Length: 338
Image 1 (cartoon, one colour):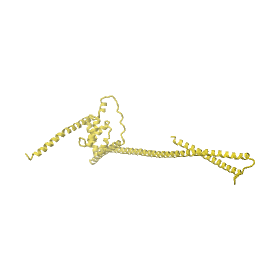
Image 2 (cartoon, helix red, strand yellow):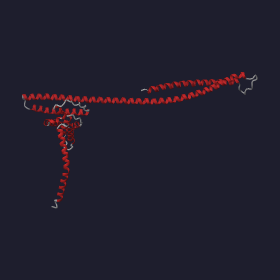
Image 3 (spheres, one colour):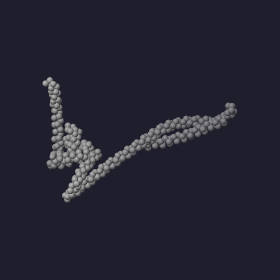
Image 4 (tube, helix red, strand yellow):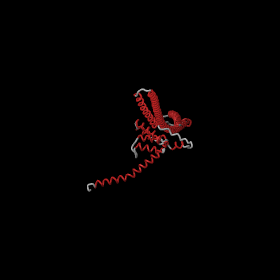
């Protein structure tokens, strides 16, 4: 007995651990059972969550076929989630075929899977047509198109097998008719598959055109931004030029005022010298050595001419600066106008 005591203690501990875990497992199983019961009654949210549980292996073993069944039912009953497209991408052609078969069997076995809004309409409820579902995103539409293509491939493979079996059997009138029917159905499926491929290629082409248009619009917007930036730089340069011209105008005005004063003084001196011979006494005073009144008058006349010429040049410069300033102001106002 002493040798078996540690094993007995270990067994008791394992049993206690299992008992401690059993309430959580039972609660999880109960939640899953309630979710399945709601899904079988046509609850769209329960169908979607049950499909997610099978897709991700939450509380149940991961089963993509079962996830496909419940997510497809939720989509048919108005669900708009994207889990169905993700599951379809992970499934093979055989799994999709098995999912379709299981979905048909589940519909026949459980009529309540149709959903609450369909059941209400069949029971004579007032006709309130549901709002049209929003258009599916491009990725979901591609996934659905790929699913349809996979379904068509499954049907083609099945029909091809039937055709091969019919061709391998003995030729009988009934078998020949069945073979022709299978060939017609196979040709129809191939036509549907080709049409689906063309539609998928057209959708991809339209998407490429939209992307090209967006890239062109982006390039135009960038070019416009660069043009606006260059225009702003030109405006800033014109503003600096206008400021410099304003300073030059102020300096020219100051120079003109100073020259006017000098001109007035020179004219006064000239008038005084012109009146000096008449007012001079009969006996002229002794002139400074080496100078005479005529020389002084000639010098003052030359100074006056130079001053007048300088004034005229300054006035012309002032006029040109004013015109240039007005032109720059007009350009600045035109550039600021939106």
